[in-house]
Amino acid sequence: MTVARLDTISDRISRALAAAEESDRARAEPRPRADRSWLVRDAAARYGLTDELAEKITATSPTEVQREARALALERVRLAAAEAEARRSADD
Image (cartoon, rainbow, N blue to C red; front, top):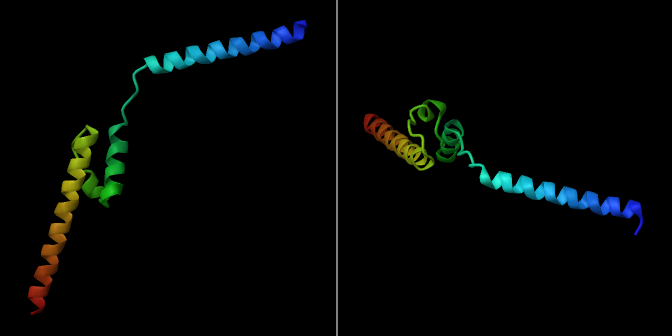
């Protein structure tokens, strides 16, 4: 083998070892959870909440944020239905 070919093989081995070490470090570090503001924005978009309603979400865990967003969406629908019923009653 030529010296140039040995250098290429050596470089490839070095890069492979560096990539493996980086991969091991990445797996060892704890993965950060999504931040609360992102969770709230995501839930608000999913349930069609306005910014004002989204601000009422106080939970911090992903499950609780989704639960509160769903409850706010249901409350919004119930209020809209009650207002529509009141308007129909007033028109009669």
